[in-house]
Length: 196
Image 1 (cartoon, helix red, strand yellow):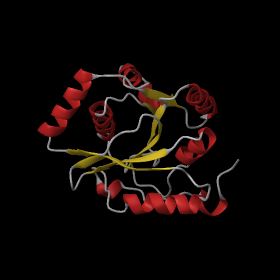
Image 2 (cartoon, one colour):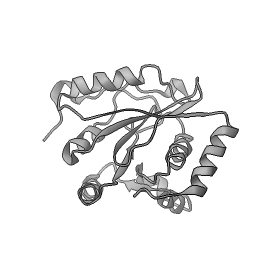
Image 3 (cartoon, helix red, strand yellow):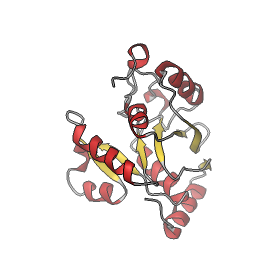
Image 4 (cartoon, helix red, strand yellow):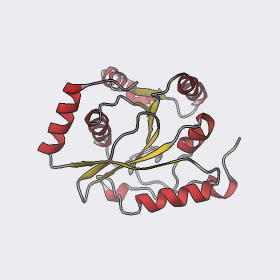
């Protein structure tokens, strides 16, 4: 839930200024936020900087193995939700139930699912948006221009290929921190559609 966080906001804005990263756009109050390109472990810090600079506290789906050891407490405290990729159903169902009860539900998803270069994105951001009626906002990090923040917000149309054309157009000039690890925005489901 979003709430005033003046200290975090000041810290985030100060850190961005000191490191010469430029923040653009405004994080929404609610919805699904795509975080891409996901090419570095520093993307977590970038997401926190974007969130805190906008006085937001989103929830973030993270591979469950990262919660082992002391890092788990830090991840949970900053909005991390462990996701067992082999059995994501329970976590996703709990998030869907929470989204129905809150007007300020904000979930961040790294649609690439990995920091390494892959072949496809994962369709969870579109599937959750369709099931909840939430809008999708395209968040980004671009190392070459030292820019990060929010792009456009859209309502998924149900036409997966058309939605991904929109996503691809936005991310065409966004490269992440390690451009060689960037995965082109595309889904296997563009030809088959999302399952019901």
